[in-house]
Image 1 (tube, helix red, strand yellow):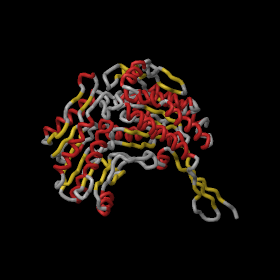
Image 2: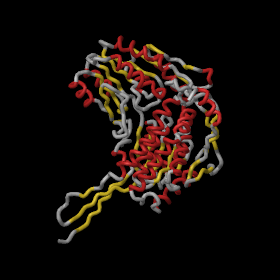
Image 3: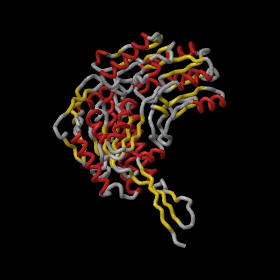
Image 4: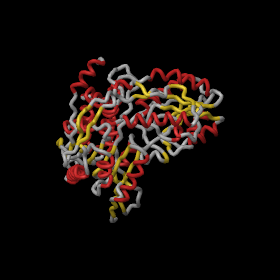
Length: 496
């Protein structure tokens, strides 16, 4: 659609900001709301229910009742599959509506909301739907006098707390395996991007998911999120967000019922370019595209660009030539490839890091300024720093904005040491035309995913997660079932 068409649809949008509990839209118990404004231009999108502990109690009680009576957990896997397949189809049928909500809510370009976020969320739900009746239990190799059955059972009530950068995709990564395994879910979306989560829940109900199985409690982390993580009747928490809050999730589990906590946290991913790589143009283009996608608001963004000193000047120039292609534009324009950061607070954070980089002696090669200030929204130019040291804040801390830092290395050992010199270990990338070096360096890197001669290739079939302070457990793939199921051994004695 044209920019005018999207703008017209945006002007007519009246999103429902109420909670969704036990299959019904509801106001918060005390009637409290908060205003949600769009980072695109500052427009008021509407009032959103501000869930408190009492609302979380209602949602958890609804989920517990649904789990205990078996309306979902005791359905055959093939029956759950059919409902989840219809859920995935419903998401695709609502592509334009969901994409517009996502773009207005958190600022990403409509072209990517439509072509990436909605299809990826639907693909995730559909994949787990297909997987669930193909996951077999086990029989242990015991002696002839026993039969030991090892079965997977749903965890129970799962609290899912997701971030604002990929609201639909992150929700789907939790919902897919959790629902497929038979759990009931209480989802707490970020207060910065709550709308698609609530619409997804409505689509799930329309697909036949029983009431109470999927509840949504929008609100603030220190209120609704904390209440959910502390709740004694929640069996597991799936959290994606900052390392700072991830630590709190673990503490909340210790303060309550020792619920399982699975954290997918931050990153400061390294992108290593060796001088033997034979297509530096492609490497430079990939570095820029991967860093500036989603305004740099990606936990796996390759924000540390490690380049061999022999090619660094040339490579930095190549990356800088790509930066203008990511100049921020109106997210409702389908030609825009970089939109708005999520809110004014995030804008201030990113600009603060840019100022810090300059103050600590890094050289700003491209960008470094706020953009489109007259729009009323929050935009930052794609920014590239050279001459960055590994002890600078921009090299060590997760910025969550379009800021790329170039660090030069002397040799392979130096590159590995620099890459691993981070509290995080989410992803990394190695660019080399020598297969021995590619394997050697990939093995040495402490990261959950290591890309070789690419960065942006991905699929639901592979696990996502990291080492160190990037979290524990894995989203995506069959390994995600480990987070939302319990293993039970049933030992039978057999009399000969």
